[in-house]
Image 1 (cartoon, rainbow, N blue to C red):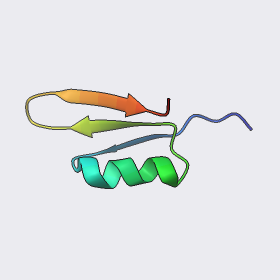
Image 2: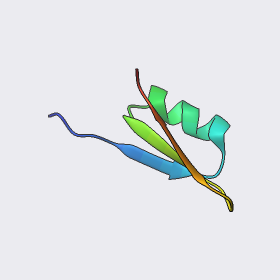
Image 3: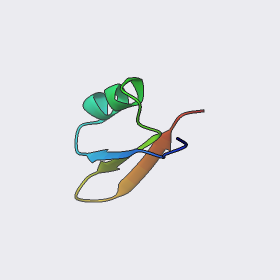
Image 4: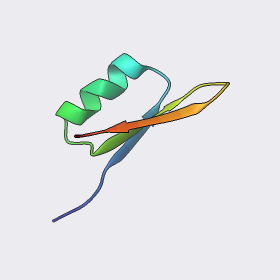
Length: 40
């Protein structure tokens, strides 16, 4: 269908697993910054 799924959370280890579950990208939320990552 072409949907982009973006997961957000505070645990990078858990967020990396969301890529295996079908997420296109994830946002790691911390008190200091927000960093983004995704499929390559």
